[in-house]
Length: 109
Image 1: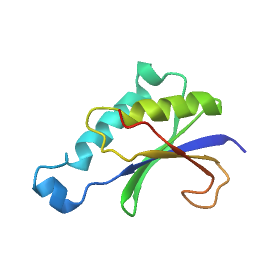
Image 2 (image 1 turned 60 degrees about the horizontal axis):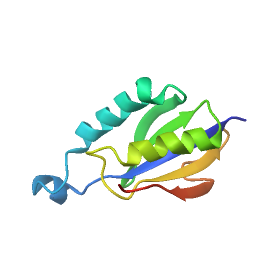
Image 3 (image 1 turned 90 degrees about the horizontal axis):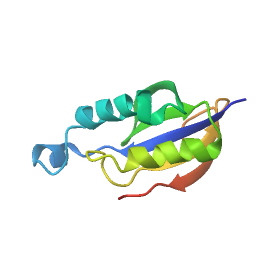
Image 4 (image 1 turned 60 degrees about the vertical axis):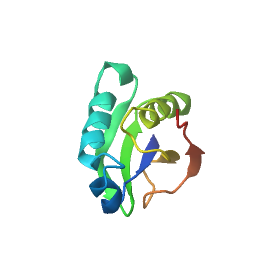
């Protein structure tokens, strides 16, 4: 069993995107993936491809201790285009579904 952190980012509604209130999700999803794969997050590994689950998009990171994984998740939450309201779930790779584990609120600025 390996430690895993899920980063849950709220998806904007179609109305918010259409009104220009929020960026289209594809813009910031790609930026988060690049950030997690880049030199600023060398200490963590992308565990699996991100995916949409209802009204959130989930990124999966592993390969480090909890403090390091939550630090990386916090840096994701404050990236310029990431919508506010992101949170992390501390879980493991044996969890049967998303969102199982301990919730950790992430910074907004």
